[in-house]
Length: 151
Image (tube, rainbow, N blue to C red; front, side, top):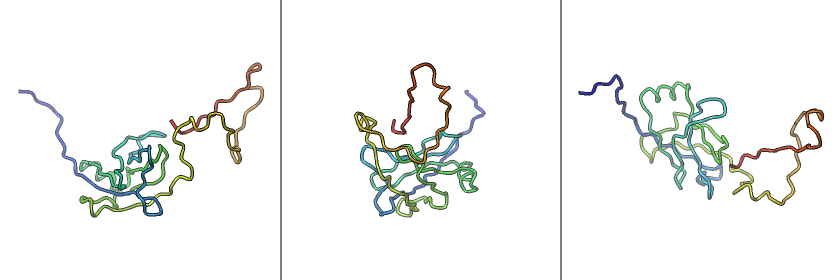
């Protein structure tokens, strides 16, 4: 018979809801709103996605529940890959109809793709502090690559 040191752990379902400040579900057409857990600087692990009504369900083990209750772990709300809020454990409920609600700000401008920028002037880069020495540019190729957050 096969023996293993690993033990199966059961997970419990917890529900929450995320809305925009106007009370509508925090869901945008062509985009996914995710509930994630930060796992390092600049990275996260996806746990759930919002449905069309703004609800989500996450499955947590007893150990994870303790970590979230104590504040060691957090649930982040990511909208178009941007951190827009934190869903704390006390807002989670074991029943969907008792789910706690957090409200997040609706993005002012939503890009459906980077192609929207092709052939258009870029907006003014005001209040962005970029410091570099002209000597860093080699030869006559003084081009800059500007990353945009819509991938």
